[in-house]
Length: 219
Image (cartoon, rainbow, N blue to C red):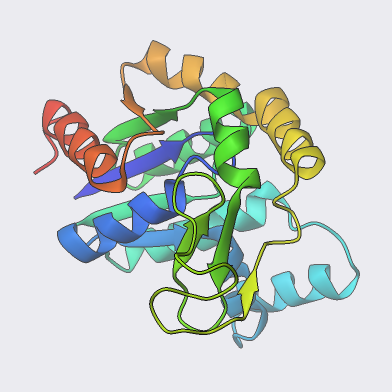
């Protein structure tokens, strides 16, 4: 069973590629956000701990998150797991490594979706989508044929994410470079690091990820 991490700054396309791995390989996307929301409503010892912490308006500790991940890993996961949103720090990476070793598993690959910051900024700031059908557009590379009208469904309800602004993205990227990008060197030192071009077309990136997984002997 494979366990993989997708690394890269916000907007690099990690979510899109994770969904493709779920669809095409039968992997399970382990989203810490989803797990916390599910645990909050679950009548279990761990769920009650999560609910209590969140009710106080506090951040859930790494210890609790690791506990939730351990429960999920032990329940089985088809072809393997994609860690989504965890680890974000070196301390979390250490904790995850200890957990995998304790339960007789290992990390198969940490795949860095490398991007050029300026190109990423242009891609994110220019994107918008149709609220009716979900079709995604871009001011420069994929505008609608008729201004203000979705090509796919004809809706005029086109929207931009509130945080898809230059200022917001730069703040999110600063947080990534301060806390998460050190994981690239961490997993390189462990021999689990692979690099793909995160700014390619979706299928090109998917093919590069497949090649990386093949190199890591992930079937």
